[in-house]
Length: 331
Ligand SMILES: Nc1ncnc2c1ncn2[C@@H]1O[C@H](COP(=O)(O)O)[C@@H](O)[C@H]1OP(=O)(O)O
Ligand SMILES: [Mg+2]
Ligand SMILES: [Mg+2]
Ligand SMILES: [Mg+2]
Image 1 (tube, rainbow, N blue to C red):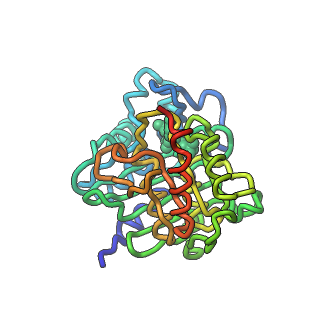
Image 2 (image 1 turned 90 degrees about the horizontal axis):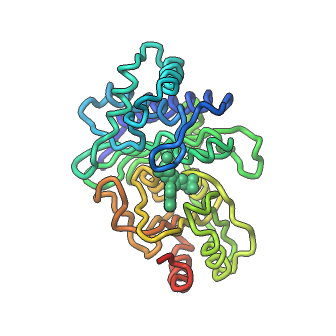
């Protein structure tokens, strides 16, 4: 069976370095650290800084690998102050960085992403959570011929135990296809394997979903929970940390239900999280039960919605979705 140990080592180093930058920025976040992109979503100096750190690291280790990443340096045209702050933050991680090296690294992320082997990166997934001082993730994955084969999902602010929110914070979920998911601390030490929970009773499931009602339909999730007989409140959490919660056994189900017709999920919003859950023994499909298709380019254009689970309760969730679809599916 193929292994990607060199890629794994480089990806872990890169995500740890980027997570440091993100935490540095988050701990003294101020109003001028973010702006609105053309699509009106927020972006911060840490989103760009994280992308620069990771893509320059990968460029040194694997110069021929293209990358599909969320941010685009073109959005920084004219934003002189923001640009300077990004460079300053990257220099705290890599003192040799220059304006040219930072912009070049960010722009390495503009591959269209269909053929062969490429990386996909969300330098900060859950920027809204990051700005609220809630959860966010640094999500990096390697795709070969349409298949996610390696991933490092950095969750720098995720408590080690969700019941003790002020306990030790931060972990990485590291996965390789057919080789499982491992949990590392933010210093790069392996802590344990990750396994989904062993709950077979849909009614006893903990469900997690987005904080943002614009990203996943909350009233539909409530209707599904009711069908399943779930009595407890769902956990609302930003970013791919929801996949981490399922992979670690903190939750049995992650629901992402379309809020408007035609929205296509981006590959960098799901590649790392999906592999983390699948390699921890869980299952990930779209809301109709189809596997997520990473061979279509930058978006999951063949899919709609996402369901991640511990495997055992998956079919019950798909059935509850099918039974509530007529009432809740946006059209
Ligand atoms: N209408 C939408 N439906 C689903 N996801 C969305 C939508 N709009 C933005 N997103 C993405 O949801 C992710 C955050 O998800 P969550 O709410 O689970 O934390 C972001 O990556 C964001 O993408 P983008 O980075 O382009 O803004
Ligand atoms: Mg994202
Ligand atoms: Mg992002
Ligand atoms: Mg974004």
